[in-house]
Length: 302
Length: 302
Figure 1: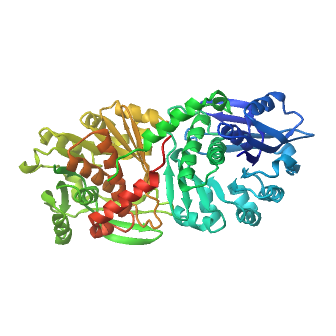
Figure 2: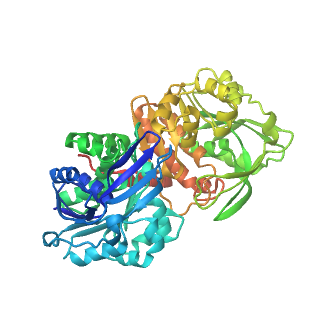
Figure 3: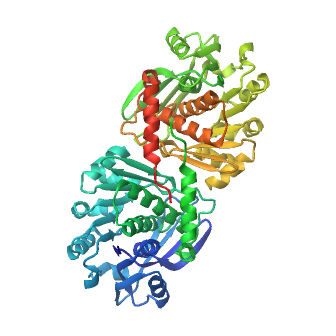
């Protein structure tokens, strides 16, 4: 099954203690699509400005990403500038220029409307709802969000969550959304808002996946060289959704394996700036690191 | 095999958002011994004041802890007062009264000197060295330490580490000891100081275990009710060392399983104040939670 993703395509300027990238390709839909493309086809919905060059279009196309839904609008592409300190756990945003994103309304090409797997990346929950009104009857809807929308568009977000099967968000945001400091209680509360599965991203500490009956914990891969965490969350979501769509299976066992594939993909993204590491990646690299995750977590039972 | 432990026996006054305990039984050697006692015998070395009552002695004795090495000195028992905020990840120390601990020098009873498994809890590294001079030829020496000693007694600590097989410390302290922000690189550097195995405690995020050839990641158990994290690290170490000593085996597979047993024990301690939860614990409870750790981390391979 292909995946429909809506999110941002952007240029990022990022500085970390290990180097910098200026106006490099970024955006949630870009990271998600590239990551998911190792597992399945992707239909992308996003907007760029007239300054958006051909090279990234060719790259995404070469990865099997359908760009029919990528609008080009008069004006400039979304730009984000941020920096990370040594702990790399949180970006400080220095500048955000929404540019063409400011007036963006997603219009799905007719060929996208029967999408079975839908990922609503971290954008205004009202735009997420606009997308949901245009898709017919997806088998699985997943979404991401952030503190900014939890704070500023809480009602619209809660409406979106009523339609969502899987919510993928950061640990602090689960607490913020549920207004509850204990993560397990907060996760239960969020599951009560609609999602059947909650994927809690904890950065370098990995991921916790909650559903009604079970909890799954996957570590992040302990890396010796972390250059730039930008896009790690969206890359995770791409691998996670990519595996679910490729297998067309939503069992607990498949969701666990998808979580590990998502973690594998994210562990590559942070090894270089922008999508540089993903551009070099082979399926053999992915399988090799999946096996390293098995070795990392294995212990004998009672 | 029995384990010799040196550490503190104390009275703690703890306040968390969920309640408070005043002058409750605590101390690293107390938590460690009680936890380890579910797996093997323990020989305790510590000091208390003349105010130390009979009940905790009877309790430790009932758990099979040998108190021959527990000195009673004129003066008061070590007291610590601290509080935790909602995140429960770090205690704020409000008061520390070393009392009889201030002039403590460990003297091992002759019956302890052929100890095969030794745990040096978080105390002055010079006292840790004094203990090592009194034991004949242990099979395994493990130790804990903290920022205070890394900062203030770095040279003595490095000397101690030269004798130690397993170091059990907090994540931030690994970085501090190695003076390196990347955890994997920092862990490599610490392994270069002597220990063959490094156990990195990450609080609610679990544990990473590094040795020359492998890394193992164990989560913490996601708990709905965390009342008081005091003693979690020492309880972890007690379960970890207890299992190693009980099996008398130091293979990578055994160390991994010991890590999970340590995490199981720590997950109980935080469910109540002081040693209250450990006092109620049965072996069946431990096995049941071990199986929950298996369910928490299991995923299908490639």
